[in-house]
Image (cartoon, rainbow, N blue to C red; front, side, top):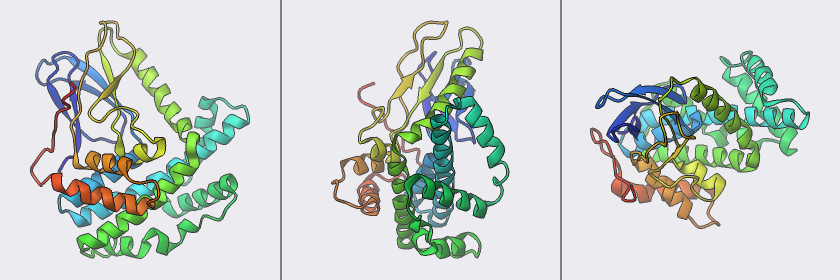
Length: 297
């Protein structure tokens, strides 16, 4: 089961495995040529967590998948609140940095209290969309199933986890589609942080920004921002142009392609189920890397 990223070293082009961490910026040393470089990951935490849940489910780890899907939903709630707050601040003429500072201070008041975070989401959704967030009802969120698995040690069947994952996917897909271009507010913060870090790198240290398609990006934007297995590169470093690279493939990315091809009249839950069924034929088994090469590289 995949638990990380794979990136080609910009110095020697050798594949470098990168374990997922709770950050978007990785300062790395290639184990092959021992040269430093920096990796910027253009993915939100909820995207990573949902992909890990999909990988776990496809590999047969049903209980572990529930934990990842539940965490992905919570982080998507946080993403919505942040996007709305930044969008509203922009409409009031505040700079992105000012809005971010106020948001961080406010979020610290609830960061260890998940119920209050849900309350913030409910109010943000009502103010932005003008509708009651009916998707927050326990039945719609699969709360009883989630609590049984995570807090009471229940051992779920695969079919039950698929049902739960489909519920989670439908809620997250709805939030992201309704946010629309407001999602760019949060992404702009990431890009600012990337730019600051890039400017502070030692002279001659190259950097690469990696973006996977993912189920949600395929659905939100109607196309893949970067082709599967491709990187997008930052401006030239002092050492000169950065070389092309490739990323590892994964069963979850196959599911993303299936979601992209799904008929438009399908519900989000139906899209997820169809994508999961299609990806099973190439699902990664425990102990396998699931790496594939992009023939275009």
